[in-house]
Length: 211
Image (tube, rainbow, N blue to C red; front, side, top):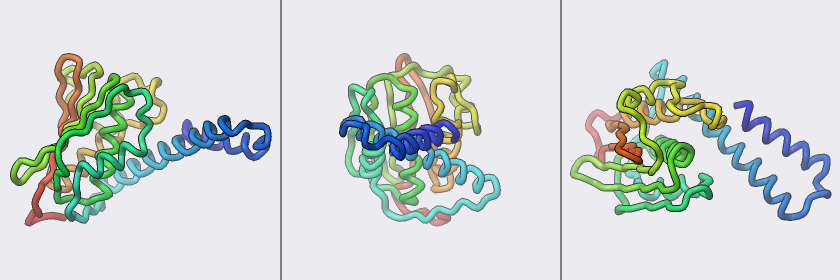
């Protein structure tokens, strides 16, 4: 949390003391940094709060009709994808019966993970198969060995060098799987040569025992 907070405070102080010294393009860059770092911090706080509630069994989900493709588009609008050459979203609306806010949190975590650790291409595909809707997030980065496929969902575990990603605290995937399972679905990982795939499964119809 200190890393994005330091950037926000530092640039805010700079603007407070020297706002008239910057050209419009410089101001735009500073404000963009403040906004993106603030967003990173907000997302980390949200994951921390959900993880804490999950430990004591107080996370609530309120399922309703949600369209996965729309959630993907909203999440992508809030993520910096400039380093990617290709972002490809495929499939139809893909209705699920899930909590909108929690679904958005999962989708955002998966897309952020792909942008941070993947290669230059991310493909999101949504498909409904009867009572289940599947969303896959595939990137062309280096895949993880099978020994890491389950470990990456453990709290605070990161298979990649943590020093390269200071905005990550190692809870996004843990929280995402917890939320998916609370809503009657699941989240799994698999890899192939030069490919990493996260597969999110959520019910497409109301569940009799929904929370």
